[in-house]
Length: 233
Image (cartoon, rainbow, N blue to C red):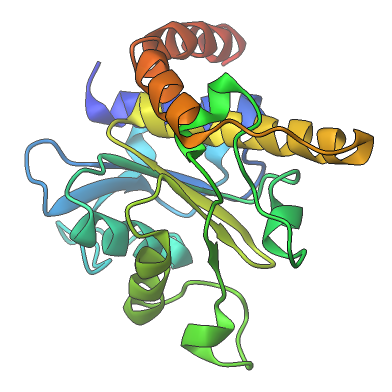
């Protein structure tokens, strides 16, 4: 399977798992040239085909004379790839259970079970007002805002975006998708646990060891999810 086809699968899996809807996007670094990334044109994720995939430079410029309309927030992807050579794929989404953790003061998204152990402690929050000022539309619509988001992400696997959504990264498309799916699951479980009482989160050591163990099992989930969307496509 080539990268374009894998990117199509990633879009459809994220839709099927409820991480994206008509909005959100996922990209992959071009294995032939790390200074390029692949991302669909401006289209709903569930409708992406291999023919919709565009190539971009890390500054967000479309390559190859492609004049189709791109996602406005493609700068999220390019800026992260520029400062994180370890990142091979990026997911940006507005999954509903995650959003409250970026807007409620004093509450942080943290791993509550082993499948979300990649979170490894409080997830940082990107406050767009710090970069764009108070008069903004919440969108990462240029390279400077992409760079600010990448700085908030730091070396973490995920960053929340206050009043907007989140961005998750991985070394590969399967890993980035896995993390985006289980971040949403963790958010639902954490919110429910907090309603019940005091929460015992994974310790840093537990999260580190569990995350290492899960890394060898990502293909298992990817195969299942891929078959599900292939059957329904």
